[in-house]
Amino acid sequence: MGSIEARPRSPRRPATMSEFLASGVTSYSFEFFPPKTPGGERHLWTALREIEALRPSFVSVTYGAGGSTRDGTVRISERIGTETSLTPIAHLTAVNHSRAELRRVIGSYAGAGIRDILALRGDPPGNPLGTWVRHPNGFAYADELVTFVRSLGDFCVGVAAFPDKHPRAADLDADARVLAGKFRAGAGYAITQFFFDADAYFRLVERLARLGCDQPIVPGVMPVTNVAQITRMAQLSGAAFPPALARRLEAVADDAMAVREIGIEVATALSARLLAGGAPGLHFITLNRSTATRDVYRNLVGSAVGPAAGAAA
Image (cartoon, rainbow, N blue to C red; front, side, top):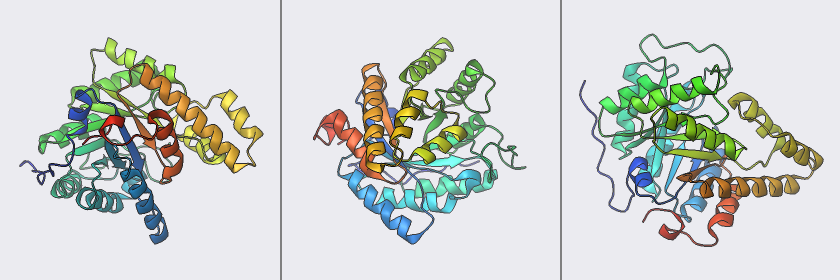
């Protein structure tokens, strides 16, 4: 199978995520998802332009369950890569996709100059915790997808990690072995699902080290701004929701501003501890609303933007 060559990257853009992390500069990246409506897309681009002013290291665009947002993910990632100064990490999932379809998506990314791909097995459509069914001409596991992407060209491949373990994993050690398998297949780094306990992240890094893996693991951080939404997402992702935080949020559940302030406070404290403990960067999950994550970012780095704040030149 022939390789896919990416369109040359503009000199103004930073290196791949792996190369950036290897430089020792703290990475600050932000995650968005493809909206379903024209109004949502306008809101997304407003948020992207606001984030662009911070000059983050990277931004990523998620892939909906079952590949449901594939076309939107590809289109928005391409547009980010060609129309902004931002460097996109494009998500890619194996669920419901044949090898031929995956190759076309990867080719689209390459055509837009995108070399960074986050390879995920993905969730089944309808029910993320439902039965996972392999496409007859596709892949069953993320490590197979990593190998496939790497075989097609000079791509930097990242994968998902789970400090509180993946919901389908038997236990934490089994979960770590799966992540180690993705690294051995060629993944250069991992980005975690959001979580609330810094020690869970540090224990994950230690488990991987015992398995001989020292690839960077970037923690995912999401400020709580909506109690019902975050509770549902935590249930689906397997993230442990701290009882003490739940009680604080429940006490002000009818006050949206108070919820937001607690969410920013908790996310800032978590982020600071992660960085102090050696995390290579932070990946902020924005839910397409940049204000809370921008506030956390500014709490960490002050008013500075650009290379001094951990972004690339």
